[in-house]
Length: 485
Image (cartoon, rainbow, N blue to C red; front, side, top):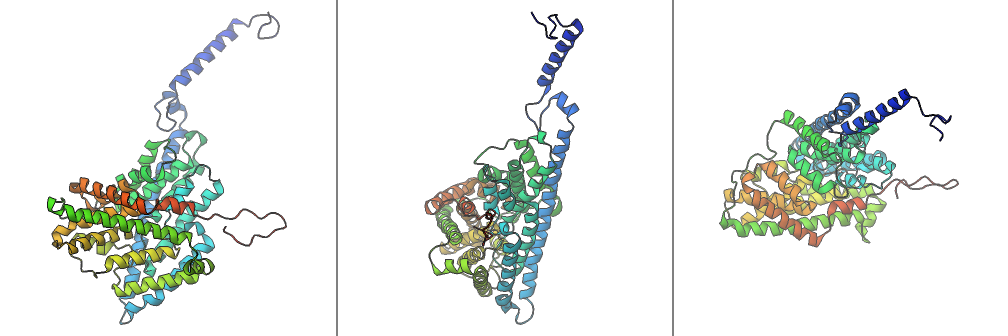
């Protein structure tokens, strides 16, 4: 019988002992290896593979950077809105200046977006939803989510706030956070196992957590809106990133709720009928809003859709002029995210026009129709607060009794427009410290979302499917006439 050495003899004893020792070492190594490639507890990998700890540190550093950039985004957006308010208050003609200022700046923002970062148009949430598809080419992912796009989006949304459009910054922070976090992938080793999908989920949810100062809301948003196609392979690191980004925002702005604390925390049985009416009205209005947004972006065989397609800048100017007119009618109450009117309603101190809710609805829809980078989260809360306030007026309730209905309107319209009832319930509960209304807020969110689903499909999924992508390179001998298909 031929031995392993090829000379018919058995291997020397020292070689056999060496092979046995090697086999035992390999068995011991496999036994010590952790089952989780990120948060494992195997002694051998912890001692030898220090690179894993470096990878974790890189991810957490990018999470902290996400929180800091969202803080900067918040301050810049608020500065933009403050600049618009200063413009309105400039002299006798200040209230009329938006009729020129709003269309002009809106056209400038849209031109820059279409010219340099077309992937930044709109809210940003549909872009992240589409980028999370596993079969999407890397070039398309970069067109939708990247660090460069995130930095542009911050400036463009702040410019939109300065224009006086009815937009918010919270939705765009999803795309901003995803773009920052996905940039970390280039510095991670292949062994870490975390992929671009997990980083985008972490960044998007971290953006929501930092923007609303609601870490739990960010986590729920990631689970409900972003991870339906696959599970997060490293949920511990993802959740840690979300919490860290939220803590960075808390360290800057303090541990304060977004809209303060509700003066009334419970719904009495005498309010069950007005509360039900708020849920139904918010569900119908949210479903209509969602359908309008999707139809507007998709376009129909009508004159306005044709105008938008052939002359997008002129169309945006027309929409912005209509938004400016609405702002003049309401005394500027419909401009921006609507934070001040919503807080005033919750505190029972608001003196708003009787048609504020309808006009805010129209201004938000028209602002989104322009195509500029714009969020709809905060305006949706303002519209919902208006619905609750209007129902309270119709039913003859006092200002104090109307406060719970206003909170219900906020959660109902947000749940109906986004069709994310759990996210809406958690975010609103954290923003108003409404822990005494947990069951009421949850029931309203579920009912409003259910009504909305009858009227319209999920808005973000529909908008994600409508996103254009850069045209593939033209074959030799042919010229590509359009940059978008």
